[in-house]
Length: 68
Image (cartoon, rainbow, N blue to C red; front, side):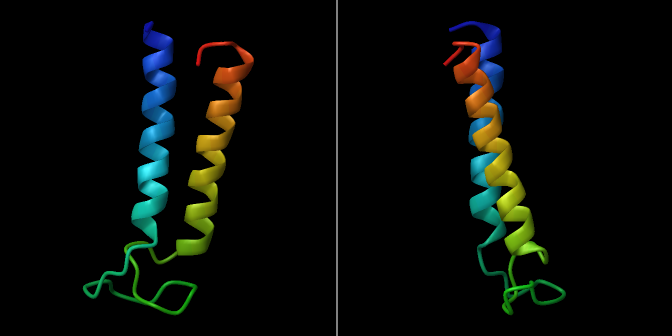
């Protein structure tokens, strides 16, 4: 496994974990998210979609360059 593969895998895993973390309910949140409940991120549907798109695009780029 070379360094570029490690970087791609790290970005994919980190953005996937962050996407999951944005939808987790948080009672200590200052305001409700756009879906109507208090989540870790107040922009839950938008931030989740962006993070999933980042993971998918990095994965597609890695596949294109045959790194993964």
